[in-house]
Image (cartoon, rainbow, N blue to C red; front, side, top):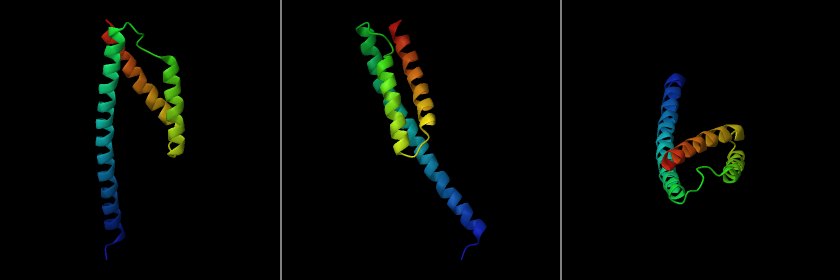
Length: 98
């Protein structure tokens, strides 16, 4: 039988391994998302469309807040996260317009 400190260290290691896997999933998922948003940005630039779409952005934020709520994640955190991503996407789209 293992002592409580050793068992705690084992559980901590398991949690950290899960966190590391999830971080990798997040990075690859963001990379895939940005591939699509780059394609959208090129399409917008080719057709002289504005780099941002405030109505869509508002819908996406509301959608993500609801998803966060359903997933027991702080909706305000989710909103801040998506707002940051959207600002990066718009920045990339603006660069493509030049």
